[in-house]
Image (cartoon, rainbow over all chains, first blue to last red; front, side, top):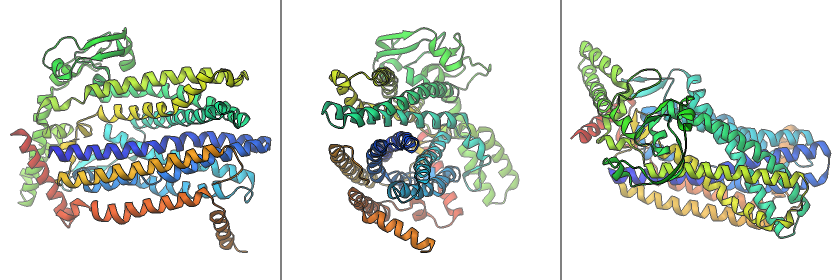
Amino acid sequence: MEDVILFSRAQFALTAMYHWLFVPLTLGLGIIIGIMETIYYRTKNEEWKTITKFWMRLFGINFAVGVATGLILEFQFGTNWSNYSWFVGDIFGAPLAIEGIMAFFMEATFIAIMFFGWNKVSKGFHLASTWLTVFGASISALWILVANAWMQYPIGMSFNPDTVRNEMTDFWAVALSPIALNKVFHTVVSCWVVGSMVCIGISAYFIIKKQNIVFAKRSIKIATIVGLVGIALTIYSGDGSAYEVSQKQPMKLAAMEGLYRGQTKAPLNAIGILKPHTEIMNNEKDVFYFDITIPYLLSYLGYRDFNAYVPGIKDILEGGYPTQNGEKPLSAKEKMSSGQKAIEALSNYKKAKKENNTLQANKELSILRENYENFGYGFIKDEKDLVPNVPLTFYSFRIMVIGGSFFVLLLLVMTYLSYKNKPFENYKWLLWVCVLSIPLVYIVSQSGWIVAEVGRQPWVIQDLMPTSAAISAIRASSVLTTLIIFCVLFTGLLIAELSIMIKQIKKGFSDKTL
Amino acid sequence: MNVLGRVFKFYYQGFSSMTIGKTLWIIILVKLFIMFAILKVFFFPNFLSSKADTDKEKSAYIVNEMEKRKVEHIN
């Protein structure tokens, strides 16, 4: 079973990470194209049309190669994660269905006009189609992110013991949960930064090569503003996400900070090198070989109070730590016992129903309801399994934050140079930094997802279902086979995308469409 | 020309004038073929449907799986 979990998780992570190579560029570059075409519409300057068409070609290549790669995740739900699919499919399916019906058709309709409609439809209609394509892509992302947020903070549902399914009782609670709102906002605006850095990096390459310099400089002017707005909103929404994580997923926050023992007036770890996790769990007192902290900041970011207590990993496992509402959280062992009662009660309820023993069924149902919030803990073998991979979460978080800070600096410098009309040609090293920022922005973006997903382990659905319960009873070898197939398929697609893109970039700005 | 005819002409001319787009369409079609005709059919069957036919049987199967896994973990 351990191998099946490992391979299935690896397969899902691989698919999601490859998919996430295409999505942020679609969302980010889309905004930039929309602004460029709006300038063309308002100024009637044909040069802006050429600029728009160049970036639209890259957008189209990325869209075409990336389209439908996310569907493979849905295949995996039905085969590798069938218990999960059954348990929460009614809730998870709704946002995915809305995404498929509404957003996909919206994108599919308007993208055709965007690419085929130049000189065939009015300029205004073409511009509207471009913006609607961008809007449709963002709406697509919205529903997927709502579904993901629900897994991190299950709300707006009730468990039906007869069908063994969670059923949605409040659509708006699911769609507008604080985790969902923050996640959607944070993810979408961070994609603007990805699109912006790709646009700036490619433009910088043109300037280094002394080709299409005027077009490249104009592109940088738009991309820097989109990037700056994007990074400012990413920081703002990231703060909101951290606050929500501290309220709803304290273990994730503790892993992000390498916080094993909680404290009041908790400092934020700016950077540090962790000692081995096992040693720390076995009563090693010092967590870091080296670290730099910012006093009080973690308490403030997590609880909006400089003096607040922030629980550490060991406190969360032991329970009973102070909370803002005065409640004493249960220990991991208490939750595990409660979860086992819930699972037993479900099983006994089904048996009682089968025997038409209504009295017993009602008694078991009452036990189930009483313990349902800890249902998933009943599958946990050892309380240490409740701790996510701390080093991976900790370092990924730092890559995201430090990388993001670097982009703030770079975007400020590029905006200044761009709008002061400074000659970029004189800053070759800076142009190369911009080019190298293209892979860096993807690493930073992927790191954000690693924090979000690794940090919430072992849960597939927070507190209700761990990976060990969500997985299908299938053979590890069959999962490994498809994992290898995916590696080959996605690597092939990535090579195809890169080679076609590089070929198009080398051709430079022209009036050609796809 | 009626609306349908104009829409057809719009798409026909659009596809005909494609350059790099033709390569992209080949990539899309090959990818969709691999995904739906090979992966979905041969590698990604609906696991639960292979274990139970009706919804009632499926829910019984899930409860059984959960019970088994809980016991496995406690012991």
